[in-house]
Length: 234
Ligand code: FES
Image 1 (spheres, rainbow, N blue to C red):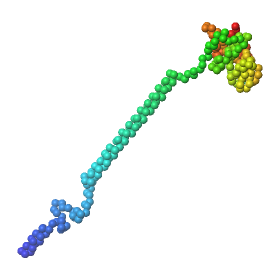
Image 2 (cartoon, helix red, strand yellow; image 1 turned 180 degrees about the horizontal axis):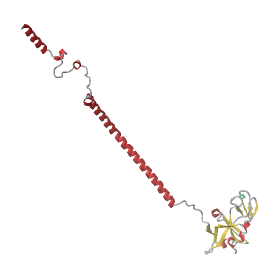
Image 3 (cartoon, protein in one colour; image 1 turned 60 degrees about the vertical axis):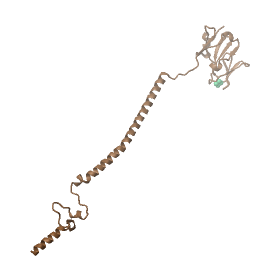
Image 4 (cartoon, protein in one colour; image 1 turned 90 degrees about the horizontal axis):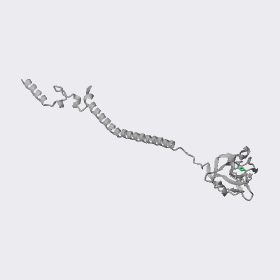
């Protein structure tokens, strides 16, 4: 009996000791493993990451991705607006260039030159044996009246195109460039000028004024001074 009591006492005493302190027999029904009792992390079971730690990490990654997307979204919108603005600027530039081209097409470059025909004074205003230089600066022409009649002499040297001067005292035209000289009628007599001065078409208009047409020239060496349109016979 004593053995039986002792055995019961031992059993009681052993039952009063917490199982954790004993660290020996595992509790029935799936008690913690010894390693857990010692504070060591228990090894993860296969597949535990999918249900335990991994989902948490996935959520963190999703959160990070969401934040990155939120951060990238304004940049993309900003870039889109920049490209849109650039496109509009390019479109406006092309439209402006097109409009300019159309305007230039509608208003082409026009070279405004002095008219080829002009009116001078009536023949009575040009006395015999005179050279009128009133129109020389504007039209490069002299109105000459000699014994043959009134003609319009072109004030361009036949050497290299300088403008000769009328020397009243010497009764001649003198070119300042290389010294060519021309008589009052335009015939060359000194210097390098190879031929006489030219004359313009001349006539008397309905209003009685002399009309000079610079689009038609008459050259002495071509025998054109005999043309009635090259001189007004009085
Ligand atoms: S340009 Fe008149 S002489 Fe040469």
